[in-house]
Amino acid sequence: MDKVYLTTREVSQLLGVNEKKVYSLAQDGKLPGTKLTGKWIFPRGELEEHLRRDARKTIERISAGSKQIILLCGSDDPVMYVIHGLFHRQNPEYALFTSSVGSSEGLRLLKRGLCHIALSHLYDPGSGDYNFPFIMEIFKNPKDLTVINLFHRSIGFVSQKEIASFREVLAGKLRFVNRQAGSGIRNRIDHLLAEEGIEGERIAGFGEEVFTHHEVAQRILNGRADVGVASEFVAGYAQLSFHKLFDERFDLVVYRDTFFEKTIQVLLEFIRSDTFLKLLEDFRGYSGRLTGKVLFPE
Image 1 (cartoon, rainbow, N blue to C red):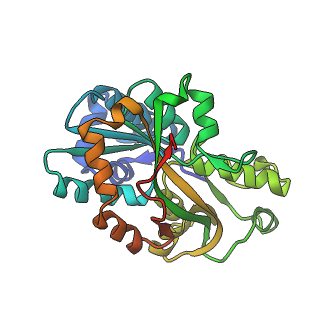
Image 2 (image 1 turned 120 degrees about the vertical axis):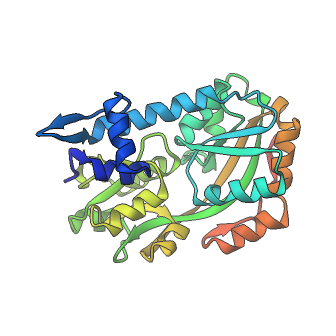
């Protein structure tokens, strides 16, 4: 069972700051915590919600109208962690920022004008297509948008020992680490469960959600979960077993009037460059077969 309360040391490791900074933030009321027998303890649920709220406030503070900042919101992907430095090195006058809030939330933030680009890989089993059905649902005028492919990637079960289905997870009484509602991976998890005729509530740990592929692997490595769904690259990086479930298309969604701005064109030049395509080759499970291609409008 996950810990309900975290110690000062655990919070410092979570935030990547020293313990003195945690004390200072708690005393100033900037972190949810309380003193018990002279020691600070922090309710895990409240702390995680506090961090999510702060992330959204940061998004809102960054002006989407900035001519030198490119803000991308939506799905999490390990490639994005590396892009920042490479892009800035080639284009030092521009800064690239990403926020992993899930594909659905990324599209909603784009609609509200709170980011330049949404990162999305939402799958629609009815049409067998990605993103377009959801764009049609969320945006009043989908024709105002442009969709560009960023890459394709391989997704599957990640575990210490190979798992090939949710039936195996259920039969083995294995603990699952889930992704947050609204994310592209969670979207596929829910569809996979439906295909196997299994209710998520029957899976141990189904209610425990994380926001990134690396968090899935970390939960498995530290024994807090037995299996999750994540990218092939993360499985290899963490030296975990990987059973492929599907390849998926990962797209950039941008308003058409923004698409022609210099900032966006500079980013597109970068993702079509040999530098980026070579990066994809170095990441296991990725393909650049459509990278940089405008998928909509055709």
